[in-house]
Image 1 (cartoon, rainbow, N blue to C red):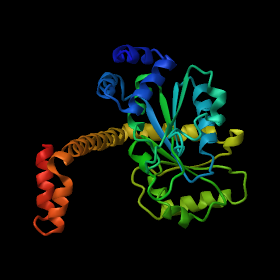
Image 2 (image 1 turned 180 degrees about the vertical axis):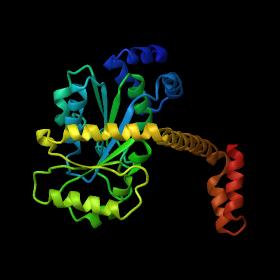
Image 3 (image 1 turned 45 degrees about the vertical axis):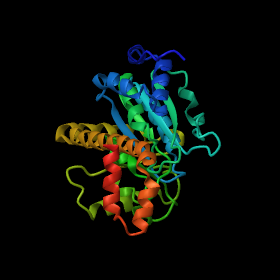
Image 4 (image 1 turned 30 degrees about the horizontal axis):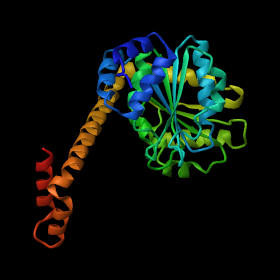
Length: 315
């Protein structure tokens, strides 16, 4: 296979060529030897897109909401990227909903790029390559990048560390407010959406959210509660206005910069830890991890001394 011309790919992606964007995302997903060159080439062209994470329990209408958001943003002339993170197929390892049936109407729009990414068994609601894929779409000129996560639970709120604005979607009839709070997702929201607002109990769900927020200290930003019926496109303009208001708040308060620095810190640490693990894997055989473990079990060596010996081999 011929070597990849990374600078050429990045330049074509910046011109909006969908095939180049898709190729770059595939490269960062595969995590091959080209990955450092790709990230280095992308770095000067990033930092412009507004990253919006959409999360919530399964069944609240995340995909439908994402699709109507794309329509509303495109009506304003904005370029939009979508990263739809799906559970992995147990057979192929790919995204189970990779065809993105609900977003098919945008497939021929040159101002929209949609990519499904498989979690590949990773918890947290995101795929491992999501941060780098975001960089690709940012460098490709997207004004807004929507990240739709898998259905979340207590451990699956990782999107908050990745997004500038986190939207938490809820729906009436999916349990009371206290139960939703237990799910560990309410505290991550910058904007709440009560979808399927034409159903009984929607107004009560919105009131419960507002009441719970009144009990805590929201700081300088109080998350608005927007009611939508995404299947009919109702309330979407209000949602776009709430997203724009939060972006203006982030810029005015300096919170956007703080969040992005924290995001970069976490990413640097994760990459460093991966490299350390790789080095440890290389030296396990040479150092004799099994031998070290046997010495610990026999009482000849304590675990800290054994770890130190293993680490010296990886240094």
